[in-house]
Length: 531
Ligand code: CFN
Ligand code: HCA
Image (cartoon, rainbow, N blue to C red; front, top):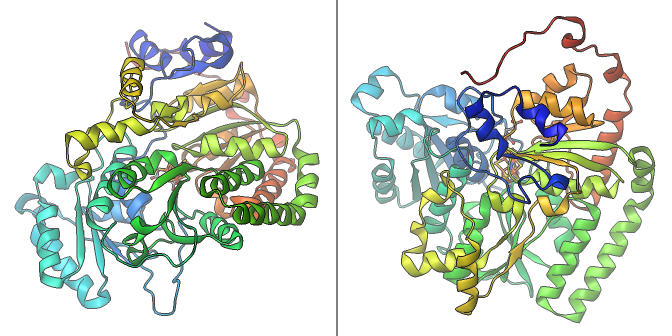
């Protein structure tokens, strides 16, 4: 084993060692090849950075749908701590359009409700919501105790639909389901597919229409993407789900093409829409100037219209001219710097492209809860075909997101190819990283410290849970989930914002003045992870 990998693993007990070894790969040494174990249970007590299933369903996927009310069915703490913490920006698209994103609704389950059941309380809560806000769609998101006491949230949703003639979806997205928030994405998407997509009949008016899938408008990213797409002449039918609405999502099946930004959280819908409605999808990345231009060119190629290709090139040239001077300035400040990047299930890959635009290298990277395909890439078409053949496509098992790897074996893929099934590929993170660099899945705080000590990145991108511990160690950290309340970082203008923020962070002298406690205090010695 390499020295760097040793450093991460040699303090672990044998059981923990065996587990974590398969989640860590160093590219040059080929110890795990380009393979990595992912989407498995975190080791209890290891201080993982992951979130829960409810976070993935309520916080990530359905929370941003602005004209719909999300009610948390559970104790008040779950609602409070998921209230406004994810920066999915939203504003009404026309006068009078409701925007419930700033609100938090909850049944506030108490001890007696847990004992006697909470369905009645949920229905009363929804009556109150209908009286005060009269939304067209309600999502009921269950937290841990609901599954334990067995409240039937789907039955409540059916009763609400009947009573009020609206759409209501009951989600059994209890926090403990699955191994991370990834299970929640899957559950949320299945519900949208079954109860929302396909309900509308309003066809797009533009010549070329798209949906943006897996874009949650953090810091306004989705708005920057829409600005560029509209400038070229595309009609954006709907965005899943950043600044999205029930009113637009229900017509999304009528768009020409699905653009998949965050593959991890939404590949389910892209594949289901391909099978059910024949809407093709393209994996795009609008993070990074090079990546954005490449994605726009791929789209023009897909539609294969010389006029559109010409317009795409004109817009790219105009946008580049606008940002060129700023980009060159920040590049002169950032070139040669190194980064570590550890985020949920997609950004650790996307942001490497933007860092490269500034001449920065990512030496250590990983995801909290990605699946193997996000690391290794995968052939994307056969999975849904096989599922669609065997069962109702909205019923695709949640098991796929619940702790087992969903990549097809080489034998299965070969057999599908031989049957004439067309395969498409999606490049994962590992193929885009250089030899010698380290990739760690479901990283923990101990490993973060070790990685920083060994690789000494100039900047470390991650989330709120580890940001301050990293800065105590004298390394600047920027939050890649919330952008430290800045942004947008997507598209052309976003790249400049990112360059400015990273330059400001790196060129403050505060970090060299920090003396980490372990440099002045004695440390405890021991073995991690028990016997
Ligand atoms: S906005 Fe997305 S881009 S949806 Fe996903 S995998 Fe989370 S909330 Mo945090 S920032 Fe993160 Fe990705 Fe897709 Fe965000 S990297 S962890 S569940 N994520
Ligand atoms: C979540 C949401 C989160 C958390 C961010 C963080 C987000 O996982 O439930 O840990 O800094 O982006 O808001 O990923």
